Amino acid sequence: MNEISAHVLFWFCAYVALGVLVGHSFLSALRWNVALYSHGSISAAVLVHGLRLVALAAVLVVVARAGAGALLAALVGFQTVRMATLQRETMAEII
Image 1 (cartoon, helix red, strand yellow):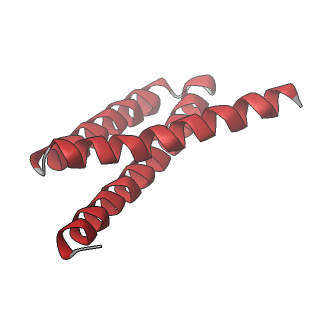
Image 2: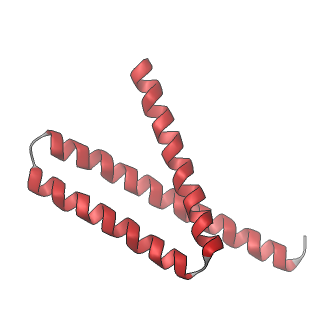
């Protein structure tokens, strides 16, 4: 593997890892957000909802400035966490 390929692979993995981290944080905040809504804390729930969306948008804008490849790699990580979480929650409902 030449130096350019290693460099590209390193940054691809770094952006995928960032996407995993952001996805996990986003979905954890979503779980917290649902709990706030269900317990009647509407003002806190709306605040968390807004912060969750603004934080995701801010991270995606910063990553997009690094280029389309970086954005796609981050979205691969985000979607991987999302699919794993949905599958885990679906299996938990079945069992």
